[in-house]
Amino acid sequence: MQPINPEGVEAQRKALNRLKRARGQLNAVIEQVESGASCRDVITQLAAVSSALDRAGFTIISTAMRNCMIAEGPDSDMTPEELEKLFLTLS
Image 1 (tube, rainbow, N blue to C red):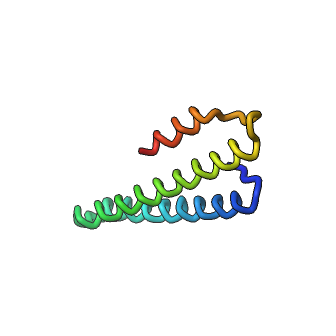
Image 2: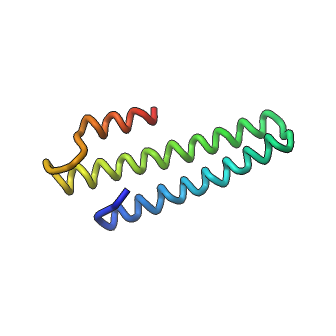
């Protein structure tokens, strides 16, 4: 993802923060499973990982839609259909 404006830079920062949070949460899940933590604790942590990844993905896609489609206009290398397909892969 290569943002081209200040709004894109902020969106990239937010996405990276969410991905790093998800990485930390996933490490915690692995440690929980290895140590035999309760099912409830593991599932709760997995839900947090999933949510963080979803939010990061939606941020990345929405930024791409704004930057690629608006800034590059008709010369964009991504079609609206491709962006829609990417977006729907997250659902």
